[in-house]
Amino acid sequence: GQQVMQIPQYQHVQEGEDFTTYCNSSTTLSNIQWYKQRPGGHPVFLIQLVKSGEVKKQKRLTFQFGEAKKNSSLHITATQTTDVGTYFCAGSASGGSYIPTFGRGTSLIVHP
Amino acid sequence: DSGVTQTPKHLITATGQRVTLRCSPRSGDLSVYWYQQSLDQGLQFLIQYYNGEERAKGNILERFSAQQFPDLHSELNLSSLELGDSALYFCASSGQVFNEQFFGPGTRLTVL
Image (cartoon, rainbow over all chains, first blue to last red; front, side):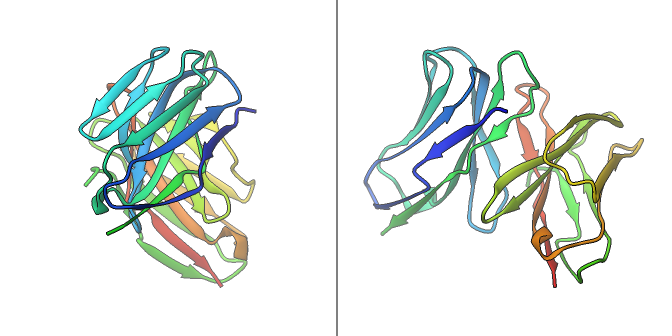
């Protein structure tokens, strides 16, 4: 079945440093979604990418979808303590069910 | 606030027991998804309902069952509970534009 791998599992950064999490799928995806879960909270939808090579920005967050539509990344510039949480990617297989498969997530810890 | 409600917030029960978790989707959303989140397994998709019908099944145990009622609320029934069923159970409903998922606050189940 489809597998979505996400690395790293944890990332500690000093406030102001950049952060990147990577997502790789075993199969070609029709789209990929990103979610953020704050400690003690629930996942919150951030964005969806659909097109090959697509790049989208939300303030300090940059999302990329690979040319082969099998990988994606989320980059945060100049992290802030409010960025703390776990970032999940969720990919839907191309030509298959649109149920997204979630990666294990990357927990971001920002030290002030 | 995502607009998705879940009850109860916390549930503590004993092995062998049966519990029911309840979810009300966002107004207008026809799809409901159930997920189990544990520390070692991440966010696992269990089952999806669309307008009262089962649409997709994931890693749902035979001891678990779900249904979606005419008013679109959904219930997840967990029976013959085991210690390993202790987890956070999230319900989500689908958005209309990107099929993004809006998660409820979750029910934390503890099996003693």
